[in-house]
Every structure is written in structure tokens, then in C-alpha cells.
Length: 336
Length: 279
Image (cartoon, each protein chain N blue to C red):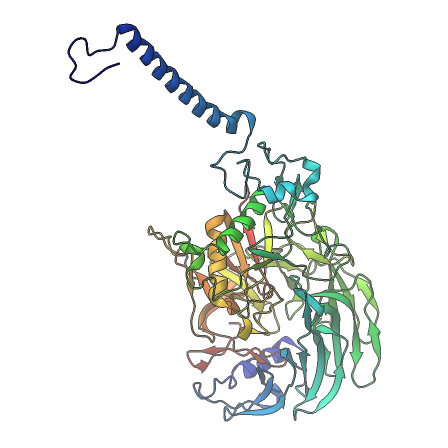
């Protein structure tokens, strides 16, 4: 996909109705944007961009559901359904068992993968990459036991190399590859690249794998949550100094603009401690998402292109669309 | 013999008076000596004194339970003598070691020790519950206060009490013996931190008071926000807490103004992570 056409598609995609059920002005969603869906307590609902209406297409009977993801062409969706498991003597006797179910846009189950799928990604319209593992109470949430790339159309399966097995995966659209993250020695990650067509894999020198849409950079998650997400140059694996990015702006994700636009969250200024003795915590009531302040920062030219205020609703969409709502209306997010 | 009102000499003889005074003084001197002796026993000979807390019979800040824990036998603790703290946190939480680590007693009135997984090496007895004395004391102090409903213990009982909340909280991974980088038997990273004996994982508290797993994102209906609030407040009051990792979207409370203890981490939906300050 060229930069110009991807920009246009992104503009269309972002400029569509990312509705909040009546509180946002409806806008037409061109068909080529694909499917927008949301998961609500086991219910999958398709969102109609022109009317804002939602249509329930599937109701899970399992204990918990998560990780709703729409395929690149919007024709299918994946969902992880989980049984609760059993407990004995204060620990899991049978841990919660996750399964990956693949549905079409009518809510029909077209495939079920019952092998304790913990993480997955679409690696093409008919391509699924997934990691299996036994659920536990670790930080990871599971102990990895394997994984594979599956072609839904042909049934061809490429198992991941191991043990040890990968703990996370990422599909990079820029080179149509699946990247796997393995725990390395002393915490240093190992990133492996797999061709989903041939199943051939090979090591990389990357420290992590959340690549920018153009593949020139990637985000590396920190070892501890207090540390910031860092940006690395894919060509040299050297850290990139984000000059020009304000110190209170924290990198969050790439924007699907076809380049290397980074979305950064502006952290609120820390309040000075009170002189009065008081509890360290306060109850938070209510729910739902709140509007936050963001910057769009171009890593290639090290400049802030614009500021945003809004939120990302928890909807699922094709990988090249990111829903964003600002002041109750849709906002165009693009490079200037 | 003196008799009141009798004529003649009514005062005792000088010799008698001096003798009486000497007796009184001797008695007083003996009394003082006895008191001093009783006091000095505590410091000089290490004998048990009445003013040591019930959980620390020798007032050395190492609980009796830790001293008699068979896993700590190598230190040859003496419950009647002040022992030195053998533990030391070396390096940082994510790049460190634990020397002279102490093992947390498996049985306690205020906590339940659990294993987060089924690793044959790290989810077995005395494998995942080692720490510095500071961490051990933090857990034990919080456990004592968790079941203390006296008026002085308000911090740990702001929203809940012994009727409404679980009688024990659940303690998971601390450090492995010796600390350092921690991977499981399959080579998968178990923790990025937990390397120098200053960190512990604790389950969120359940409404049904059971000591069982809880995913507060998957099962918010079972989550006791108030009890967990009290538990974290208790840890902060009883220890030098640096940060606590929580799943901020699900935990139900956040830092008060000017406080930065709670840090968001979406991987902490089945437990929160208490990190003590570096010594």
C-alpha cells in the first residue's frame, strides 16, 4: 500500500462515524473501511456507522470473553472465550481454559480452536497466528505451551519453534510477517520473524516488535510500568531520542497513517502533596472512558504535528483503522 | 517499747534508730538492685522481658515465627537472644540479588500463602517466598493489623471490618532464594523484578472471603474493592512502600492528590505488586 493511498484510506477511516450511540454525530462509513464491532459482556455487536445502531450478532455462553479482533478485510472476527476453571486449596485445580472462536459478520462460528489460545493476531484475511498456554496468576497470565500460524482457507499449520515458546506476537503489515517475542536470558527479549506463507522463521536483532506502519521504528515495552515506552530504529536497533516531544508526553501507540506517527498521552501535572495527614488513596466511582489530551508526534522528522483531546473507545476494527472520539464528534487525525 | 502518752523517755534509743534506718536503707538498696537486675537481663543476658511484643520474644525485630521457621534453620536464630539481621538487598528490584534472605512462615493468622502457577520448581513449598527482613516484617505487620480491629488501627479498617472482609489476605511470589533474575522451568520470564527481596505479589480481596484466585477484570462481581483499599492502605502504613502496581481500570481507587504510590500496569489484574523502597 503506498503512502498516499494509505493516507487517503486512513483519512476516510478516521473520518467515519465512530459513534457513541447517539452522542456523536453520525457519519457515513464507506464499505471499504470494513467492520466495526464491540464486545460487551460476552455480546458481540456490529456498529452501523450511518445510523449509530448496533446489532447483536453473537452471545457467548462462557464465563468471560476478551480480545475481539476484526480481520483485515472485515469479513471475520476472532474472540477468546474462557471457562472459569476450578479451585482447590486456594489455587487452580483446573485453570481457566481459553478458546479462540472465529465468526463471520453474521455471528456464525466458522472455526473453533480449543487449544488454550491465550494470544492471537490476524496475519491476513485468512491467516491466524496464535499462542497457547496454561492460565495462571503470573504477570503474563499464562505459561506458554506453544502456538502456530494457521491458514483458515487451506488448513495449513506452521507450529512455532520451541520450547521455550513465545509469550507474545505481532503481525507487521508492512512486510506481511509475524513477529514472536521469546523471553531471553536475564530479561533480554528475543524476537523471531516468521513468514506466514512459508512458515520459515529466523532470528532478528530487534529488542521488541511493535512496529510503526512503515516498519522504520518499533516501540519497546519497559521492564517496569514506571519506565517509559521507548522507540527504536528498526534498521539499527538503536534507541531514538524523541527530541521535541514534551517531557510530560508519554508514547502510547502508532497511528495507522502509513508512516511513523506516534500517539503520545499528555500526563496531568502531578499535584503537590497535601500538608494534611490523609489516606493515600481515594475511591473512584463511576465508569467509562474519559477524554484525555494527546499529541501526534512524527518520529521521522521529530516534530509534533497536532494536539488532540478525546478518547479511544474499546471497539474492534481492521488494523488500519483506529476509532477516536473527540468532543462527542469524530476528529480527523492525519499528518500535516 | 514506745508507748504513747507515757511519761518518761518516749523516743527510741539512738542505737535503735540507727539500726532501723540501716534496715530500711538496706531494703531499699536491695529493691533497687533487684529492679536493675531485672531490667539488665533484657539487654545483657538476652532473657525474655515483659516489654517485648508477643510476636518477637527477644526484641530483635525478627519475629519468633521467622526464627523458628525450619527454612531459616541455617541462621541458627535464638529466640532468647537478639539476633542480627542476615538479609541484604543488593542492587535494584530488576537487577539485583538477595543475600541472607529470610523465608516467610507458611502459616500465619493474617495471611494465606499461595502459588500463582504450577511450575514444578517455583510453585512448591519454600521456593517463592524469600525476602529481606524488611519485606518479611512488612507482610507480618500488615497481617497483624489485618486482624486487629482496635480503635488505634483505623488505617486498615477504613471501609471494612472483621465481619465484612476476608480474615486472611493472600501472599504470592516474593523472591526466590538468593534473588536474581527469575525464569520458570520452561525458560519463560516469571518476573522482571522480584530480584532483591523487596517485592511481593498479593491477591485482590474477594467478596466471598475465600482465599482463591481472582481476576478483577474478568470477574469484577467477586472483587471486594473496599477490603482491597483497606489492605493496600495497611501495607502503606506498615512498610516503606515505594510503589504498588495495579490494574487501574479495574481496581476501583487511585492515588490521592500528591500521592504516586499506585502505578498502572494492565498485567496486574490477578494480583497487585507491592514494592518496598531500596534500603
